[in-house]
Length: 247
Image (cartoon, rainbow, N blue to C red):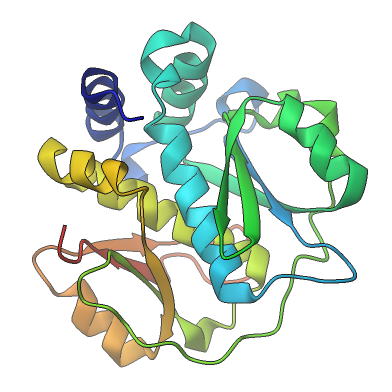
């Protein structure tokens, strides 16, 4: 059940402390406490792995749900984790989880999203030196999944479009679509966010050609994500564009 007053408080915090310009935030490698990250666990069982698209959609949902959770208002530690992260480079680290380690990770504060049986859990951010042991032991490698068949775009549903020419790993793409979902929410008026929350944060992740991504980025209602270039792709690459759909 969505509590509008608490959602408003979480949204105001997100909107006030974030922007699409990563240069407005800093970190100091000589001060580890300033290097903050949100960890994301991707549930990828060995015997029956999920399809890539719904797993990315679950990751995007989980990230924005952590940001807009009522505990961002009511829980001092949850709020502190978010604000410390919002003020830095908003890093995300995706990890593979399965079997007992997947279950153990649920003891760490966060939110799990499920899309068509694909599950991802996003955790309250922390300094990279303070990642809880049950999350830290999850593998960063081994998250990749084969692309699944192209799916149509529903204009009524918030869209997170990914540049398919970049050939990002599933883990990298999960981090990027998470950027897209939270920054989209930050840029929308509260009434839109409330409708989205009450509907369960539906969204669609779609791979598109670079030209189509650029066209989407030119829209007045679009939120564009450019990567810092720490892993896989060049700095300032346009990775993701999010649009609000019909909400």
